[in-house]
Length: 132
Image (cartoon, rainbow, N blue to C red; front, side, top):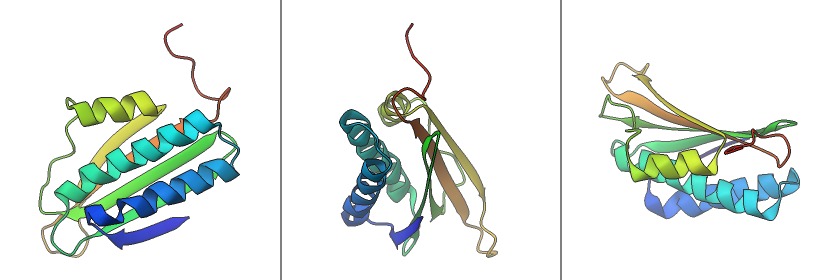
């Protein structure tokens, strides 16, 4: 599923609602649904702060037997990837099984960049066991 909204903080509730509904339909447990909502909010918030004026926030949600994957992206004037030494990144890392970011030049020749964050969360019993 793909959802595109203007890259504004007021639109983050849409993404939280979408991931919550998808996770519920995919039979995630209540705690995992809450983790996903918070993680999507954190990832999208980070991207909205980097977004160029009038940019779109694009989120692609994929749900499969192994779990749910989100790829979120915005067009930005900034060519750097989100920092991984921040509290925000630690939250993302704690709430998901994997999280990664990337940046590439926009294909439209404007000199802007596409900044992405991808995260994945497995269903209870399919994700890696941490701390054991």
